[in-house]
Image (tube, rainbow, N blue to C red; front, side, top):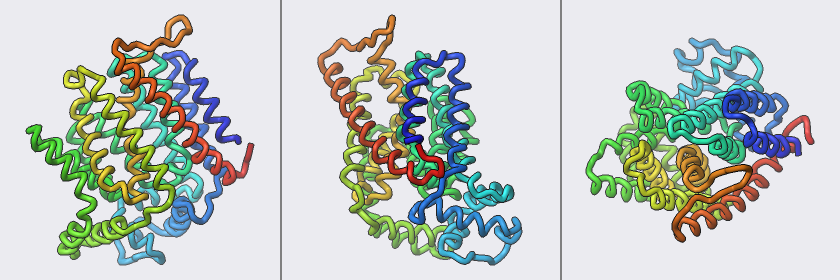
Length: 386
């Protein structure tokens, strides 16, 4: 129970840390949780196990052998990454120079938690939030971005970096050209970023009817995967596009059974929260997250269309949690206040009160359930157990 106890302790303490010290506290959590991976032994069915195998191969190679030779590797995974994920191979190559494979999840954890906590600080500063809103953001990250997510390495890094850049791009409106460069580079890290880049480009549409049409198309784009696969197949002269066609086929006809009902219920809770937030937040048109919220709507629409495929559904739930951090923190800022040690609900309408109470009950139930299935089974894979 070491991991669960540490997470619970970190969450509780975050509500009592002074605002001027919260950055230091976030940094401390980041280092402690990331360093736990030094004692993590992944089973064979974990992505991290395969990443370790790849790490052991790459650490024996030079930069020239890996990127400027005809070498295609001794596994299907290596061949896949050479064709479609050279950005990830570069990341793996850089860490492999240290020769310690356990540093791969450690560095990934530092980047993941570091960027997420940095976003929380930015959100709180941009919207002038009290300390308990930041504590809520920390709680969400610690509960929903669990050790198995980080052990997947590629998709969690791609999502966290993309979410960091999209916030800078659409909310802060800073370094937008640099953000687009990041989006493109991330496509060489994980192909899932292609759809996110396409969604970002859809935001260039200014007509509300075209935006509505785009939402409908995103819902239907995954069921049309066979047509898309055939279209992409025409460009199979490119190794990257050929691999993309194969991925579309795999995900189009992939597994659908494993824990699907739990995942779809969690997705629906997130979607209902977001729709309710847009309804309750009457001044949504005036605040800076309008375009950012439209981006979230597009991602939710695509996830809804792909919800029959478990792998995409589960990964996109992770992305949606990361993207909705600003909305969750704004939600608490709007409805909750602490005065003289007392919790106060700030709402003047019956509908708002009902929405808040129902959402909080569902959220607490989800947190307990998710913590149980995400953290307790992971405890057995650590060399040091509580």
